[in-house]
Length: 203
Ligand code: ZN
Image 1 (cartoon, rainbow, N blue to C red):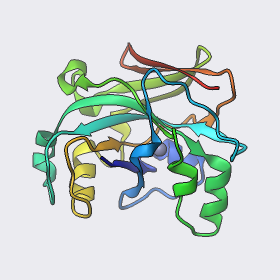
Image 2: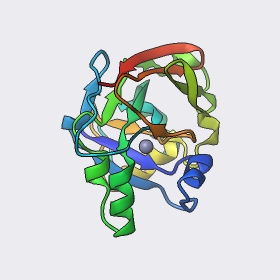
Image 3: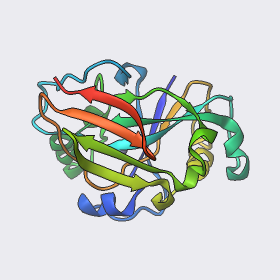
Image 4: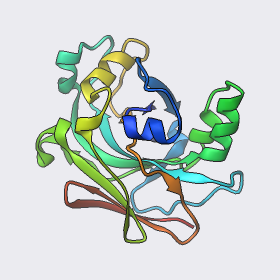
């Protein structure tokens, strides 16, 4: 199983980190050891000074595919969820400034929090889904999939040219603006529309 993530898929988040708006998806991977399951706590690694939450809509691939056309991509997933792409922003900034890959900042153990899965029909139009993250009860990030620069189906078409998709693979589809550092003791809650999908404690 692999985790495929897209960076800078929301204009307002790309801008808050002073990144250009991409003309082609920015893609990185996380290994299966990065997975943090619903019900587990997130332990802040000692390696970093500044770990940010990035709440993202998730898609679970449930069919094997390669070179999938965008118009057929919807046949390759039936379930969606909500996750957090935990990012060591201090490490990522250091790596970015040297033009190096991001894995040390993005793929560490526990960096891919994954909620429970839900039938994609449960929430209505997938390309018009509101989702949000609160931190200690206060709104931290709020977005809608309508603002994605590359849609879920376009992302599947793009990445499947490079990586064969397999059942169980997971897509992290990018984060809207509002990322910020988490601290020990924080409580994060994630929502799609008005439905709470998770509560996650930072330790
Ligand atoms: Zn992200």
